[in-house]
Image 1 (cartoon, rainbow, N blue to C red):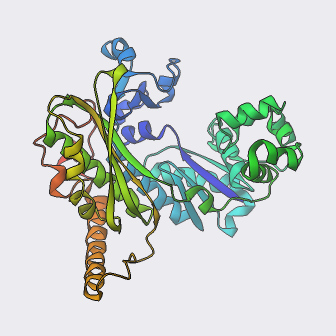
Image 2 (cartoon, helix red, strand yellow):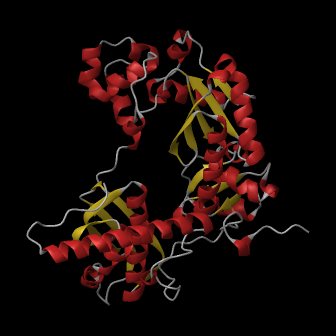
Image 3 (tube, helix red, strand yellow):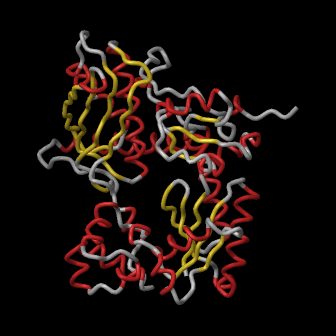
Length: 423
């Protein structure tokens, strides 16, 4: 059996850990640039305000004190996520983190006789040690565990063990409740008169393959209790990594544009290293103009050797940014996309036609850079983002491009100067 642990309204729950006064209030966390709601408390959901509602539509309720809106505090969420995962590792034989607020767990042999009690213990431990409420669902496969977790969150205990006989349950659940079946695939299934999980499981294999390929076939095997997914199936490395943001304020300043691109390159490089990947090159892009008539500009940069090193990447980006820049344009967004991704697998190969001494020098630089950024990532993970950064991201001189975070809460678990004080 495998379990899925999923934090309830995770971003809001994190905010309540550092600010208990939010308990019982209608709270929502906003997206980057304070754009729209991306996490809602149960009290907020009770007001029938849907996910994705823009902040400007909630201004009156906010002014009347009916709702509390907060900026995304990803430093806080990431730290509390790490603490949740550390707690789970103390209680499970194996933990596979799926997202910032979800993880698959494998119970110890001694717990399998009473998974309901084990689930309650897991839930209580996470709540006691971290302060995050969660749902825990158990089933024979990961796809079934997702369904069990969905049911668990609606139960007072927050725990659910999927029964052996699922026929009645599957007859009532629509196909779009299944993990891995998105909107387009669900529409194709309905077009073939497959509306429920029960009817999906009863569909012949050749028809499943025709409608959704091998992935749908594997999903159905999982629904029938046959484990068909490994960790690599949902952690396969991406074809590209993109990091971009709309600016808090539009800008005509070259240095502000450069600082934004350098900062986004730094963030995207962290993702490369986290996935143990290197990139062959990148596309640098920027947008300008009014909202409905924005124009997209881009330049491609190929790196001398595939790399994940922030300093090596930023060092070759300045000419591309200068090529995008014109003093007559007002920029509203920038970003970077890495392409040509491949596993790092130690040191990268250099051309056989390079001189021996040059190849040796490149390898030595790669070794040193690898050690450097391993240390940088470790320091930032421990003490908070941007504790250590390259100079190109700026010291705050050109702040106009930075995203709006007017409602940012304290980063109380990672910043000494933002610790909560008790009177």
